[in-house]
Image (cartoon, rainbow, N blue to C red):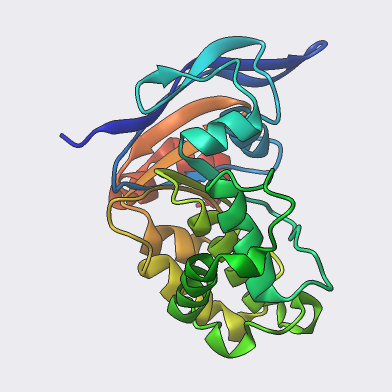
Length: 247
């Protein structure tokens, strides 16, 4: 069995009397493609926020590559190998695409304190940024400000920023959200081309994407895991049909 790269043990989150996640335990292995699905209000985004370190759990723990990172900050988890994209794009609208990727590489290499040296003094990082963008089909737009890109292309830039960090685990929060149907094919191709050793957890409402991309699906309802299995098993599970798929 491949290495467990991300694990939660009894993860809980309460906001006063509201119990958002309830004893969630799951494992994500190296190279795995896992989808997290569930109805609105199931606790999916809260769970991912706990994984990434933007929300502290009320109980339970988060483990990354065998280390307890429950009390570590988001930045510390990124340095330990966890990267995330967000449901709503967070790109700098006026900054050229390549420069944004270069800044991510600069951060990864711990060069942000070298303020006396320009990013342009690191040609290897510029070459790496160009290669990342080329691999995602954005090479021709490297010099564009992100506000000029189609929305689907902006989602690809977010993926480039995450991949620039060389993560072991990639969390994708609704990558298809807001992407017009005509632009979805490029995003699907990029997902298919992700490094095979990378562990990927995706939250997505687009069931066509979920059943195409995921090799395993976890279903969350009212903050609890109600099913965990292969796409075929999930599709046929009566609890999932009742809670989410509507069959």
